[in-house]
Amino acid sequence: MSLTSKCTRASIQLRPTDSRSKSIMSQTLTSRLDSIVDRVDNDERLSLEDGLFLEQEVDLHTLGHLANIVRERRNGNVAWYNKNIHLNPTNVCVYRCRFCAFRADLRDEKAYTFSDDMIRERVLEGRAGGATEIHVVGGLHHKKKFDWYMNVIRTIHETCPEIHIKAWTPVEIHWFSFISKKPIRWVLEQMMEAGLGSMPGGGAEIFDSEIRRQICEHKADSDVWFDVHRTAHELGLRSNATMLYGHLEQASHRIDHLLRLRELQDETGGFQTYIPLAFHPENTELDHIQKADGLFDLRMTAVGRLMLDNFDHVKAYWIMLGKQTAQLALCYGADDLDGTVVHELIYHDAGAKTPEGMTVEQLHHLIRETGREPVERDTVYRRVLRDGSDWRVEDRDS
Ligand code: V47
Image (cartoon, rainbow, N blue to C red; front, side, top):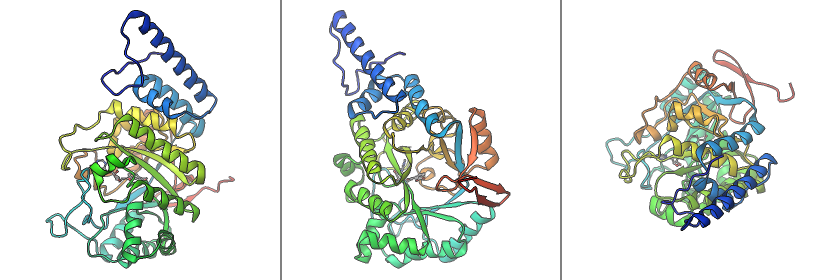
């Protein structure tokens, strides 16, 4: 195994000044890596210092090798995917996150808001294509009352009760609590009654308060993000978690972010999947930043897999990574490619060049090319048995 020394980044290692100290340093690094390898082999927890070491000192192939051990231990050779459709009911948003290309002001030319008929049409399109899930997130509209957001969920559920509704981030739930003047728990209960099935992982960005202040000031902070997920888990909802990387953050912020996720997962066990998200700068206020490259994306996938020892799944969101990096990610810790993803807007507004959706045949081809076995899942990772657009979930005991 080889080690890299990236001296230009903030580093936990001492810089060598002569050949003797170089050799001492190399021994120290090697024994540190040996200790990590042993712990990964024995399914033991890695520390904050290990996380920084992995990020800064360990080469990508070694990272991938280690992450793949964890990936295969949890998911074997399976690569999960689902048939899903996206609905962003409005892009009008009171917040002005600097990384966001999707949002619009009330009177912007590109501002839009879905009517009930448009929502129904989207859901019926999903049903006709055999989607098992609808992923719903959007802006926080200046003029819409809590009931409008409730109506989005109710309309979807009434139109197609069998489709799983994965909707709203903690940022939205917090906003609903603010406009309804009701507690978070009440908001979640109302949404569940209307048809909410689980929550996506968005709105996490980077939990560090100083970075958060610089990229999304005013929006719900990390305490709120965790409070909403904790409450959702207590109510029996499963949820996902993301991390937005490749903007103003440093390695220490990323490892801190992962450890905070791991801590809540120890407490509740309610997270299903971790999704590392690369910042796409086009059409944002941070467009001077160069997008992270594929090698860095793989690094983030692998480090996430290694640090989040209590998460079952790591997603390679192909829409964001591009198809080839997403394929490689299946050998660098990821076990899930997300889905057919029809009508994605958040990444495409920010310059993503990937298609807005993929067919099941294309997903199968992509997965099989990597030597993995494609398995369709529903939102809560039950195997889906499919006959065209008809589907049912496999009994877990069969
Ligand atoms: O929270 C917004 C990110 C997230 C940009 O749970 C951007 O299954 C990059 O959470 N460049 C929303 N990222 C997407 C999300 C998600 C995606 C796929 C699956 C799941 C899941 C969740 O997208 C936001 C933010 O972190 N984002 N703008 C941008 N310009």
